[in-house]
Length: 435
Image 1 (cartoon, rainbow, N blue to C red):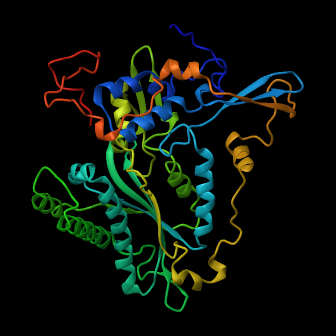
Image 2 (cartoon, helix red, strand yellow):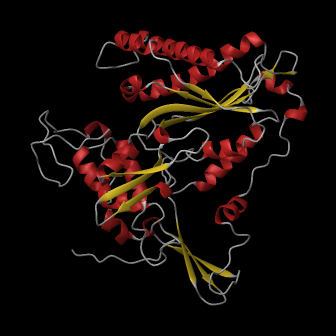
Image 3 (cartoon, rainbow, N blue to C red):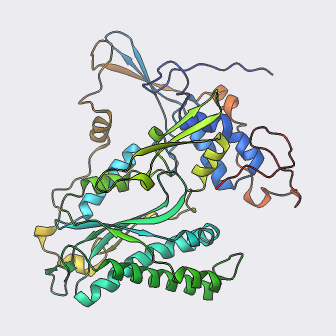
């Protein structure tokens, strides 16, 4: 039976009359998501994310229409999907995370440190994500703890895992906010022996390498790792490489760093403002920081790269974290259960930090004091719920639950038919190059 598509106003302020912005990530997934599933047969977790992004902030999930009491103008706001990896929603959760972080931070200088995994280990991490991501965050804390213990203090550390670079390639690193110094056994604050740093650059790099390799060897001995080549050979190779641990100068003003860490707390890989989908050209343009051409003392210049839509979707999905994995962790005196935190002087604790209400956050995000009508300036509105639109779902989705993960690849022979990226037809060449 033929069904007609209902045209809805949208909550996108840049396009108030169409269904959604034609250059949005949502439009990319709505037009190419089902094709990606059909060709590449992703896992159940990726299928759920694809389907969530497709309907996020669209009439498929319903919403609310605000009608101005003065002039009758209507403003449509559609519901979000709430998926923890969705790039289109959850701005409020990110702001709330920053408020909670403010409560943990102390009135002391902080260092922003980045722990980077050598690219030699990318393949091993891809195949053992859950155990190795957890081991990486543990190794970062063990590094700081090992360098602080001889100086007789316990620092605080909050770290966030990133698996992506600015260009969305697989680049595993951990961003950490670390206190300059820590609390000794008497509750007094102690600063490091070295000025403006916890330890020397070489000590940080060497200690981090030893801690991470120790974690990998422990997992290998307990048979928790799988890899296509001998692990001992790979570990000998990375032992010869200098691992990079970059630290900034200490600062009391951590607002910029907190904002950067919060940017990808409830989001994966990219923000919507940096990715543009060109429907007619079947291209996706990504704006990224070109660090290779960065001049010393200057911000990195912007560059752009073009991808096929299917490649762009894969670049996003490869950064989906394992189920129930906590990408943000607190250690030392940043952890509320740590005994030493109870001995911290009240002068160092942020007593004034508060958790803002949802309405306060909305006013900040929208840059508005109150919600006003754009046509007449009235602040009186009538609110009415918008039901879910089944026609919208039927247009973009097959409206069925994701396949069972145990039967997802059932019936596929080892000689799988290969497809070209340009068209959904069999080809004798290999699949699109996806890195």
